[in-house]
Image 1 (cartoon, helix red, strand yellow):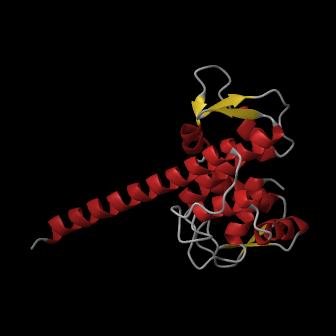
Image 2 (cartoon, rainbow, N blue to C red; image 1 turned 45 degrees about the horizontal axis):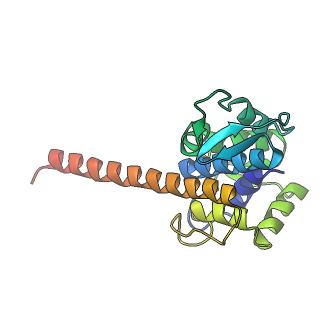
Length: 202
């Protein structure tokens, strides 16, 4: 299991009191993938740039897809730009992958393609490892979980200290991206409410 898959698992196990938005989770999964690629030596982070490394592509097919999308010529991609590009619909991709692997099943009567009320995890060793990693207080997983509101109150809760500067850079970028996405949502809600009031009249 990768950090990204572990994060997806704990986002659904158990169904959180506070539903995790697909966009928030997608951004956090992209950050988790980047951390997995860093650990594998597939990339390095120079300042805030994602720089290709020298190792071969990961065996995990989703990580391999992430590695294939790395910008390999300067100017390299910024961490923030990686999150938004790679994160597009990434939660749905992980759902599909876990379903294909038999680790996730759909509940009967589900109307939407994504969400804790429509899918449930199968009890597998991978699921148990992910849950154990969270219960053991893995700082990286805890910080990514905090970014999507699984631990703590939300993305403003930075989670426990990590120590590694590069990892901290990626996790901080995830938190900032999630907060930016929330700001966009709030702005759209205000705009839609104002538009509705215009039509409704005094």
